[in-house]
Image (cartoon, rainbow, N blue to C red; front, top):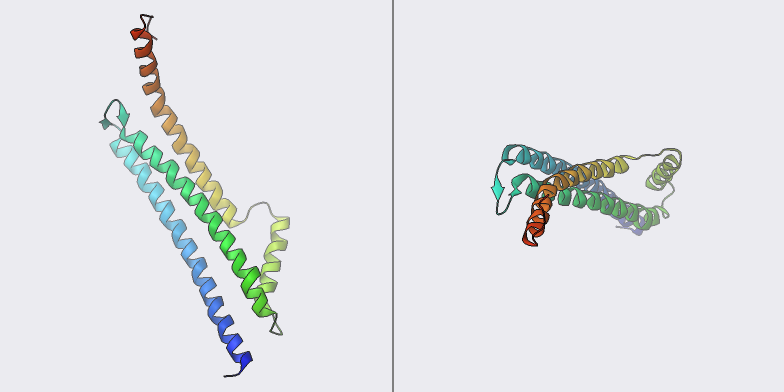
Amino acid sequence: MDRDELIFKEYKLYSEQKENFIDRNFNTNKFYMAAIVIIIFAMIYTGNIVFLNKITATLVFAFFGVTVSALWWMNVDSYNTLIKIKYANVIEKIEEKFPVQPFTDEYKGIEEYKKNKIFMFSDIQKLIAVIFALFFFAVCISEITPICAMIIDKIINMKGGVGI
């Protein structure tokens, strides 16, 4: 096998791996979306369950929802970074040895498109993760507020003051 054929085979293999990586990214997003839907259903169906001292199942699941949303956002960001590295640092370098550079041209096209558009798909994924995080955070606050009010009322009553 000559050097050019070897380079081409490595390029082909790496290109296929990049595409598999992008597919994994989409599957990961499906996982996070399913996890959030499950958390919302769990909040709906277990909302009346109370643990310890007025800590509800809704609060626990909302906390998990905030955590999953944050992990989703970080995961989208990580995948974007890794995909950019795969394009810029690996595929483009290999393509310098070829007469045609399809991935380099594609990446330049994507970058040009980004300059003219506000949102890319990954930006929308991040926005959805942020919206869910804010939703779950609001649920956490609504569940924590009565607990805090009860604690403050107990503290005031212990000091001999008037309750809230």
